[in-house]
Amino acid sequence: MERLTRREREVSLLLMEEKTDKEIGAILTVSVNTARTHIKNIRRKLGISHRGWARLLELEPEDGNGNETAKNHQNGD
Image 1 (tube, rainbow, N blue to C red):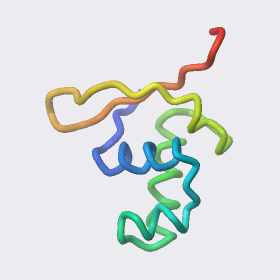
Image 2 (cartoon, helix red, strand yellow):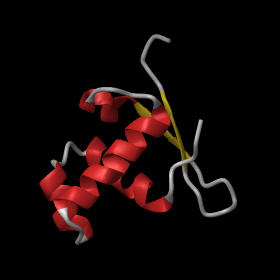
Image 3 (cartoon, rainbow, N blue to C red):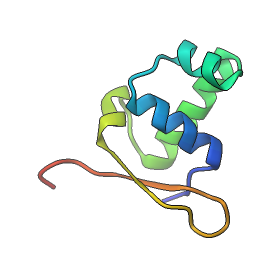
């Protein structure tokens, strides 16, 4: 699994707070399209196809190189 960048981790935390693409862009002072690109990259890296996934994320600490890691964690698995 590819590691999330620092910015992707920020976006994933906002997604877990159920922020919209527009809200994420405003909070991070980026365009909505940039926010969507980060979301698309997170979903691609985690192999997740739906937005409700944010509640299922289990985030791990940095890997020592400034990169965050994340993996999909589903209750009961």
